[in-house]
Amino acid sequence: MTRILGFDPGLATLGYGVIDIEAKRPVMRDFGVIHTPASQSLGERLCTIYQDVHTLLEQWQPQQVAAEQLFFYRMANTITVAQARGVLLLALAQRGLALREFAPPVVKQTLTGYGKADKQAVQTAVAQELALNRIPQPDDAADALAVALTAWLHPGAGQS
Image (cartoon, rainbow, N blue to C red; front, side):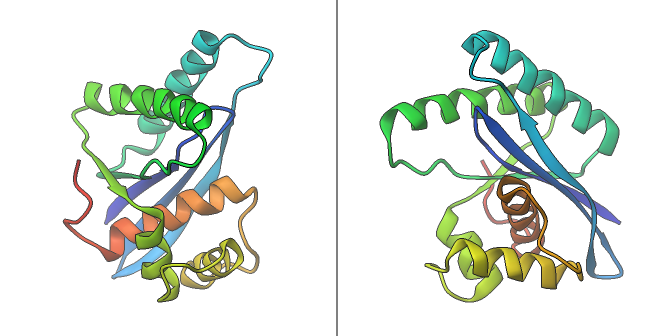
């Protein structure tokens, strides 16, 4: 069995999803989000992310960890997401785990066959691939599961 922990990095909301590969099929184990309130200082928010990521790593003991690569669309947002990503990298490095990263179009192409698929199509593909009755919510958690599935479907790719 291989366990993969996927992340959709963000400062306000960081999505995560855990899948196990059993008998060459993915099985969803957990998903959710780490929230950090805007009322907290940046340092406090990064500490929350670090502590919660550490807890997830301890609880799930993944063999692989993957995340969506940074997408540059607004500089201020990109900087805060990069800071959250840095905390994620620190927590992984402390456990000797490498981060596999996938660009958003690669995730979309992998799950839907179309690199410019919309969010709904990707989320529907996640639910189908994991044999779920409904799309995981919130969106950030579904995106993290999409990244974990991409890591499974692309062994050896996306190494950082």
